[in-house]
Length: 162
Image (tube, rainbow, N blue to C red; front, side, top):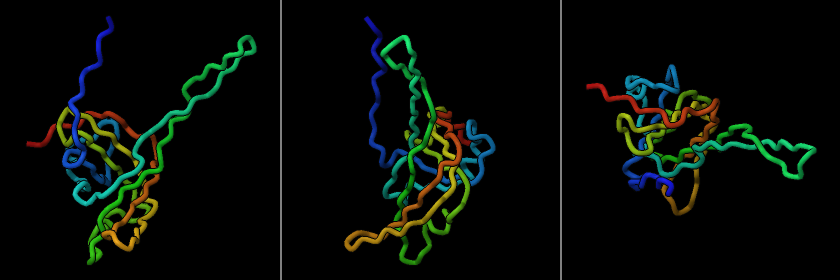
Protein backbone atom coordinates (compact mmCIF):
# COMPACT_ATOMS: atom_id res chain seq x y z
CA UNK A 1 0.00 0.00 0.00
CA UNK A 2 1.23 3.48 -0.83
CA UNK A 3 2.26 5.77 2.02
CA UNK A 4 -0.38 8.45 2.62
CA UNK A 5 0.49 12.11 2.31
CA UNK A 6 1.25 13.90 5.58
CA UNK A 7 -1.95 15.20 7.18
CA UNK A 8 -2.09 19.00 7.10
CA UNK A 9 -2.52 21.20 10.14
CA UNK A 10 -5.06 23.55 8.59
CA UNK A 11 -5.11 27.18 9.53
CA UNK A 12 -6.98 30.40 8.97
CA UNK A 13 -4.85 32.93 7.08
CA UNK A 14 -6.06 36.11 8.83
CA UNK A 15 -4.00 36.73 11.94
CA UNK A 16 -1.36 34.23 10.81
CA UNK A 17 0.08 35.27 7.44
CA UNK A 18 2.74 38.00 7.40
CA UNK A 19 3.44 40.10 4.31
CA UNK A 20 6.43 42.42 4.18
CA UNK A 21 7.68 45.18 1.90
CA UNK A 22 11.47 44.88 1.90
CA UNK A 23 13.40 47.52 -0.07
CA UNK A 24 16.64 45.55 -0.38
CA UNK A 25 17.50 41.84 -0.38
CA UNK A 26 20.94 40.84 -1.66
CA UNK A 27 20.00 37.20 -2.39
CA UNK A 28 16.30 36.47 -2.81
CA UNK A 29 17.00 32.77 -2.26
CA UNK A 30 18.53 33.46 1.16
CA UNK A 31 17.29 36.71 2.76
CA UNK A 32 18.91 37.58 6.06
CA UNK A 33 17.02 38.37 9.26
CA UNK A 34 18.50 41.89 9.16
CA UNK A 35 17.10 42.46 5.65
CA UNK A 36 13.64 41.20 6.68
CA UNK A 37 13.67 43.26 9.87
CA UNK A 38 14.50 46.37 7.81
CA UNK A 39 11.24 45.87 5.89
CA UNK A 40 7.73 47.07 6.69
CA UNK A 41 4.98 44.68 7.85
CA UNK A 42 1.91 45.27 5.68
CA UNK A 43 -0.65 42.78 6.97
CA UNK A 44 -2.30 45.09 9.54
CA UNK A 45 -3.46 47.44 6.74
CA UNK A 46 -4.02 44.84 4.00
CA UNK A 47 -7.70 44.44 3.19
CA UNK A 48 -7.37 42.24 0.10
CA UNK A 49 -4.82 40.64 -2.18
CA UNK A 50 -4.82 39.17 -5.64
CA UNK A 51 -2.32 37.14 -7.64
CA UNK A 52 0.95 36.26 -5.89
CA UNK A 53 1.31 32.88 -7.55
CA UNK A 54 3.31 31.37 -10.34
CA UNK A 55 2.18 29.01 -13.05
CA UNK A 56 3.94 26.99 -15.69
CA UNK A 57 2.97 26.56 -19.28
CA UNK A 58 3.62 23.53 -21.41
CA UNK A 59 5.05 23.14 -24.89
CA UNK A 60 3.71 20.45 -27.22
CA UNK A 61 6.30 18.07 -28.68
CA UNK A 62 4.55 16.16 -31.47
CA UNK A 63 6.24 13.37 -33.37
CA UNK A 64 5.25 12.07 -36.79
CA UNK A 65 5.26 8.48 -35.53
CA UNK A 66 2.38 8.98 -33.05
CA UNK A 67 -1.04 10.59 -32.98
CA UNK A 68 -0.47 11.48 -29.33
CA UNK A 69 1.19 14.84 -28.63
CA UNK A 70 3.21 14.83 -25.40
CA UNK A 71 4.19 18.05 -23.66
CA UNK A 72 7.20 19.31 -21.76
CA UNK A 73 7.36 22.07 -19.14
CA UNK A 74 7.53 25.54 -20.67
CA UNK A 75 7.59 29.14 -19.48
CA UNK A 76 7.03 30.15 -15.86
CA UNK A 77 4.85 33.21 -15.37
CA UNK A 78 3.47 35.14 -12.43
CA UNK A 79 -0.10 36.33 -12.17
CA UNK A 80 -0.89 40.04 -12.14
CA UNK A 81 -0.56 40.87 -8.46
CA UNK A 82 -1.90 43.52 -6.11
CA UNK A 83 -2.38 44.39 -2.47
CA UNK A 84 -5.34 46.49 -1.37
CA UNK A 85 -4.89 48.68 1.70
CA UNK A 86 -7.13 50.84 3.84
CA UNK A 87 -6.80 54.53 2.97
CA UNK A 88 -6.27 57.07 5.75
CA UNK A 89 -8.36 60.24 5.86
CA UNK A 90 -5.19 62.28 6.50
CA UNK A 91 -3.37 60.67 3.55
CA UNK A 92 -0.69 59.12 5.79
CA UNK A 93 -1.01 55.57 4.54
CA UNK A 94 0.50 53.11 2.08
CA UNK A 95 0.78 55.86 -0.56
CA UNK A 96 3.87 57.20 1.19
CA UNK A 97 5.53 53.76 1.25
CA UNK A 98 4.65 52.06 -2.03
CA UNK A 99 5.16 54.89 -4.48
CA UNK A 100 4.79 54.32 -8.21
CA UNK A 101 7.94 52.71 -9.67
CA UNK A 102 9.36 51.81 -6.23
CA UNK A 103 11.51 48.68 -6.50
CA UNK A 104 11.78 46.09 -3.76
CA UNK A 105 10.48 42.74 -2.57
CA UNK A 106 7.13 41.51 -1.31
CA UNK A 107 7.73 38.66 1.12
CA UNK A 108 4.94 36.25 2.00
CA UNK A 109 5.23 34.26 5.23
CA UNK A 110 2.04 32.25 4.88
CA UNK A 111 2.31 30.38 8.17
CA UNK A 112 3.70 33.39 10.06
CA UNK A 113 7.22 34.61 10.81
CA UNK A 114 8.41 31.29 12.18
CA UNK A 115 12.09 30.37 11.72
CA UNK A 116 12.60 27.26 9.54
CA UNK A 117 9.09 27.61 8.07
CA UNK A 118 9.03 28.84 4.48
CA UNK A 119 8.39 32.13 2.72
CA UNK A 120 8.06 33.33 -0.87
CA UNK A 121 10.13 36.30 -2.03
CA UNK A 122 8.77 38.30 -4.97
CA UNK A 123 11.06 40.86 -6.68
CA UNK A 124 8.67 43.64 -7.68
CA UNK A 125 8.17 47.15 -8.95
CA UNK A 126 5.10 49.15 -7.95
CA UNK A 127 3.14 50.03 -11.09
CA UNK A 128 0.25 52.00 -9.64
CA UNK A 129 -1.67 53.19 -6.61
CA UNK A 130 -5.29 52.93 -7.66
CA UNK A 131 -7.80 54.68 -5.42
CA UNK A 132 -10.86 52.49 -5.03
CA UNK A 133 -13.91 54.70 -4.90
CA UNK A 134 -17.09 53.00 -3.75
CA UNK A 135 -20.19 54.69 -2.43
CA UNK A 136 -20.81 52.53 0.63
CA UNK A 137 -17.40 51.10 1.53
CA UNK A 138 -14.38 52.33 3.43
CA UNK A 139 -11.77 54.01 1.23
CA UNK A 140 -8.99 51.79 -0.09
CA UNK A 141 -5.80 52.02 -2.15
CA UNK A 142 -4.82 49.17 -4.47
CA UNK A 143 -1.09 48.89 -5.07
CA UNK A 144 -0.38 46.96 -8.26
CA UNK A 145 2.94 45.27 -8.90
CA UNK A 146 5.05 44.01 -11.79
CA UNK A 147 6.92 40.87 -10.77
CA UNK A 148 10.32 41.57 -12.25
CA UNK A 149 12.02 38.18 -12.01
CA UNK A 150 11.23 34.65 -10.92
CA UNK A 151 10.12 34.57 -7.28
CA UNK A 152 12.09 32.53 -4.77
CA UNK A 153 9.54 30.08 -3.42
CA UNK A 154 9.63 27.99 -0.25
CA UNK A 155 12.73 29.70 1.12
CA UNK A 156 13.55 29.00 4.80
CA UNK A 157 12.72 31.86 7.17
CA UNK A 158 15.92 32.82 9.03
CA UNK A 159 16.18 32.72 12.80
CA UNK A 160 15.25 35.82 14.74
CA UNK A 161 17.99 37.98 16.20
CA UNK A 162 18.24 37.55 19.99
